[in-house]
Figure (cartoon, rainbow over the protein chains, first blue to last red):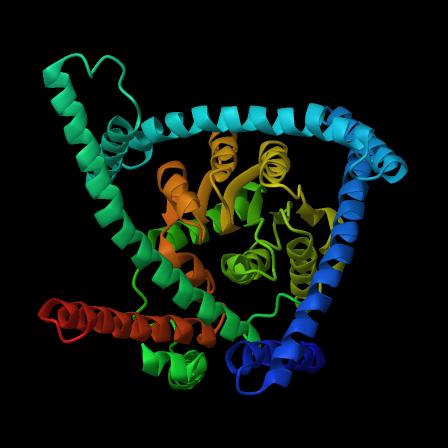
Length: 214
Length: 254
């Protein structure tokens, strides 16, 4: 059976934050309550991070104990996590050793993933024809090509008049697509997302959705 | 403009109250047949099929809730994702491999653990819940994607449901799914994420479709009622925009 207490607490705090957002000019105390509740939420988020890290550690420790092929990577993760915690606790978050870990390990690894991402995105666009061969797919790829040709510098085109005209045409076309069609479409999507967010929030306030496990 | 400044945020509150009122009215009116007249969204039809196939084949379903913070405005799709996680867990609870949830935010991780535990408890099989069913895989966009990729690759996953806040890093997840031979059904609130998902996922959920997951997975009459209310508000917005555009065009409103 779902507990009515957790729903009542969710309704009360959610209602207060919502009322504070809309009525803080008319009833200033509601604004203060909203700020206080949000401050509590920020503090809870910090503790939640600690719990999340402990959960991560526990999951990978179990994987190490299982001793399968992936356990080596879990061992590396645990060793890296503990080493980073020790170094950062000893040296401080802005200490030279902590920054060395960030600049020489974290940032290069993430940069390599970004490079991989660029290749994956190009490959994915080509792979679309395997999933869905329809008008929208053709339109999507055509627009990508036009935007690419209109925004990236095409070396050598400035010297040949005919190519210069084509390059200029692509620039105008890309600008028209991004400023008119893409902006209109994006606003339409964002309005839909806003309505969906309102509906989701209200479902939680009304107790239809209870991600807090009540 | 002066009128709007005088009213402040009050019209917003009226909109929220009317929205909630209509949801309650539609939920009460459609209690007997809540799922009647829902238009078909192919992604959810395929998701229901994927859940059935996963149970039969003994494979796992992976629900990823993104990396949006719960305090910020980007939490909407992840909160809708919890409703999907709950329904998927119920449907796949008899499978040899129960669903796994990943997220890139600590609070989302705790809420997904709570959702899974609550669902198992409601079904009377709380002992089936395992702490490694809901994982915080990373707290930066790329570390989260890297951690979730390993779940997709090593977890014998047959279907991925990505419902949350994602940027372009979501392509790493869809690519991992493609390599693992699993299907990907995905939706997000971010525009770059949606553009990537349109190209990269097998079944993209465009715009507000990601919020409709609960209604299409039979989560309750209030879910369907919220869809009907969204439709009414969408038409109202369209009419207001058209009137505004016409008024500007003829010079009534400057």
